Image (cartoon, rainbow, N blue to C red; front, side, top):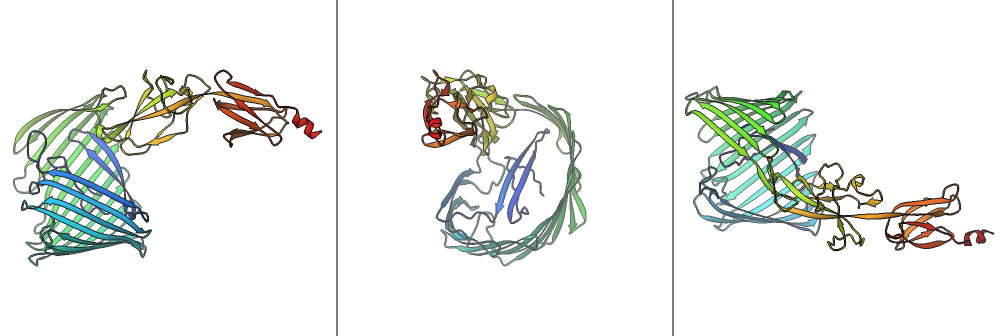
Length: 523
């Protein structure tokens, strides 16, 4: 759908990507300069931020822009905006269809003057779509109005935005006075189409128009994207386009090509670039990259990279030649440190910030209370979780690493427990957090059996604290059996009678001896 290159500080931003009303599942693919690759998935729900009635949601953030905390070097991005920036937002559900919103923002403007902006508004769900209305005001006396409407119309996702500012300045568009924009998009199987038209009027009463069309599609293993943008008004007319192709010839060879061209004021190809990634081995990647500028001095850059991905670190070497600056050679070593279950640190080649760690302590719960007590309970070694290969060590810990903030299912693999009569609780779910270790205790309990005889076909119930936790029927010879019963006191009952029993370490197998009241009652 779109592509970007990160700037000198590593930041990137996608503006105006064509999202549909409702649930959008976006995939970000990152290609490093030496053949590295990783992928992230992000669900985005458009028009779905309605807060349940009577509930209050909040969000706060802050950043100190323009300064790099390492080496005292200035940031290479957005250097005209510096200083501390704070943001707070609240959402309150007035009804199932209406949400009240409010926010407060403090930032340093491009004139190095601190500005405070307050906003209040409504989110509503009516007419089969989502409506938004915001009123804004700053501490300089300016104010503004923003409105938007999103809806699916005959299979098309339609969005209309309208903005009116009255002596109101924002840090992104300080000279904006009025803006109107209409955007429609739709998917046709493997093809996605977006069309938009925008009108902007600035504080100098200059009107500018922008028309944009974008089509994305997939053919076999290749993804194709073409964008054409036309700008009219202001300093001059400009029509430019971009084409991107990306795909795999085979699982080991990835090709990408990008062409930027101009239609007006002149017809020219601005630049072309191509990249080839080849997976020579499972841990070895080769990359070749060519960038050619087709106008002005027509400079070009050719680079070749070799990346080795070990268990603990990644090592890369890149050699490049530029027609402007000559030869360059760069070597890099990348790794991450993250706390482990033994109180130390583990070294990995993948970024730890993308993952979280949960330490699972597995212990034999002798007092059956579900809480780990070092004086009573026993740590278990060589135990695994279901669908995982990591085993618990001497401290009973299993370090579980998973995607940050994603629900991760944890369940003891009972086949790895030291005794067949040991059981563990039902599965639990946790959300690992980056740079923070959660410790979860999972008890393991010893069990026994309850067996006996009743009338053939009788229903026998196992009762704990007045609640039926299991049941079975007597076999043709009257025999019945309850397996893997935790050490506790129970009641065994039929329609005719009941009996108290206790399963414990001294008596793990309990035989029920029914009294003769059943037979006497029937006689």
